[in-house]
Length: 503
Image (tube, rainbow, N blue to C red; front, top):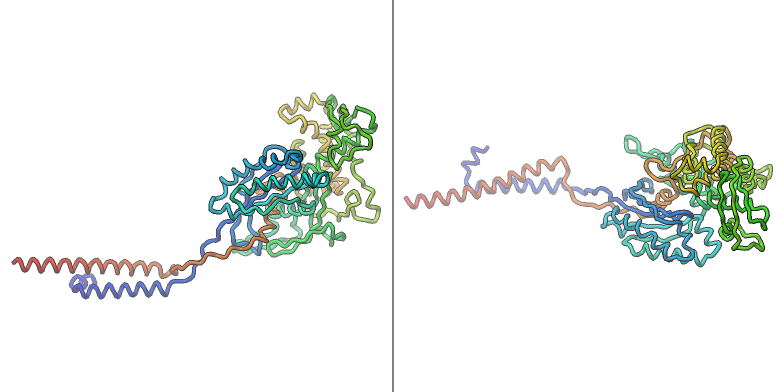
């Protein structure tokens, strides 16, 4: 063919090039179809404003959600320096300013082009619930300041709110089951596998001001006040949840201290849960500064009390049990404590936040039987203050002092409050992270919110079918070669004609 082309006139070459070009154009027109670009990545941020501290979590998911819910992953986290925002009741501007370093960090993680469309939320829990009970004006001022700070950044701020106890518990349940891939996962063939009811895990959360228990019961829920309904990845869930306000670790220990002050005229408090030899002074104003610990009539707020640890495990256990009302339910009702309905615990449970951190300190997160847990706590609570400090010289002294009463409290809450026994105790797993993500209500909150974030319409472009792409390239190259060959042939003939005239 090349031999014939070499002998072909420029007009002939041009005809071949035109034919090849037309063929290329036909291939392109026939082969073009609509092509959808891969789904874009979306981002979201959640501030977890707890009673003792605030943390910011940064998430991402693809815009093409599965059965209406995003496949969300944590890509960043930042702990806000200082106490929880409720602690700034008397200086709310500091609550807003405290968030800035974490917001600056988030702006380094989220691409600048996606920041203005990044939904950002602040959810406050029991600390702000208590402050709202005490002084709703101060609570509103704190929300105004944190909102003002977040709005200074190029994000889609959706507002600050106080989560109910049931929301806090149920979102934590979503987090656990999502991270464990129990809510569903992809099969090898790319199909979505829906959950098996028997695999669904319960959630146990212990914060500073409240504690939550949430699980999928084996029988219908009798009290609709404790029922939460969700639809995630195309599946409906009916779960039991209850939050006990004032039964978080910090508030429970404050209630314990107040209960040990038997004589309101005395300036001495003997504390059986503090190590022997420990002593501190506190004011009555500090002791009765929470709605969880109402001040007795006629107390002197400026009075100083001397607290002395006695390190008596049996007395400690007895004092902690008095914080619960185990008889309010009556004999004929399934119950937790304080008269609150609770179906029998069912399935495996993940215990996180305070449950995990306190038991981790005592090396009790390894699946030990209940008898060993009891023995370890009793042995630790019998130590004197000198022994405890020598064994843990770098641990914060306030935390070190509280590990005994906090662990005794956890044991009573789980065993007598939630009714875990020797057999079901092994169903509790203590973890702070799962699949490299922090366990808490925040991820579940973000997952649930993706149900309300519209799915982005896929971006449509024109593209050539893959099997015709190579043919189109070849014919296009051939067309270009013919055009170049034609130009060379014309140039050659012109120069040859000039040469002949010169002869």
